[in-house]
Image (cartoon, rainbow, N blue to C red):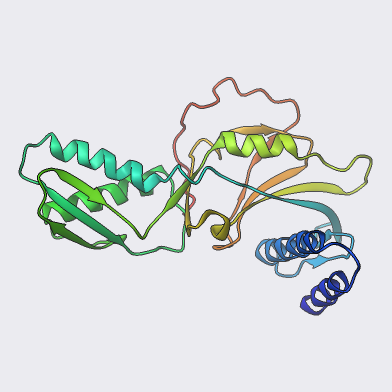
Length: 250
């Protein structure tokens, strides 16, 4: 399949299309190829952009659309956690006054609410000088300061919310009157968001999204993690925005 993909991209490069159009078409091919490899290592991609996968009834053609899931990069979950810790430790008095620079190990995985709580507990333990097994924190450096302040310059976790997903789903429409099943793949890119990890809102996997696509997936291009969403046509979610128990996505 790799040789076919390379030939396909060469044909696009040698075409007379505008540079931006070529780049978009090549990106779409790469996104689909990476998703196909992660979903089913034996899948085949046709030059029509169809994914051919094996099934109990024989090979099945799937029409796949890929769309970039662009998030608000200002919603850095690490910054929120550090602020919460500052408030909690300041309430204990002046014992922990100081400027703390937290350096993290960078896990090749995403986070849910439970993992974020574990990360928060590690930082608090590190500041208190407790001896534990650290999974996320590499080191904490303390400098003199008249107030308690915690900073981080090298780690970023961008929040992925159900509202951001619903917005991109609403903008994506399946092709009309085609016999094949139609899938929508929402691409999470660490390059676009300048990060290597995302916080996946625990409500995402519990919610049912309204769409005419047969299946919808979130695909993290960096980690190759695939999350299939619940999809139904004309579904209402009266409890939208109400957190549900985390399912674990890391």
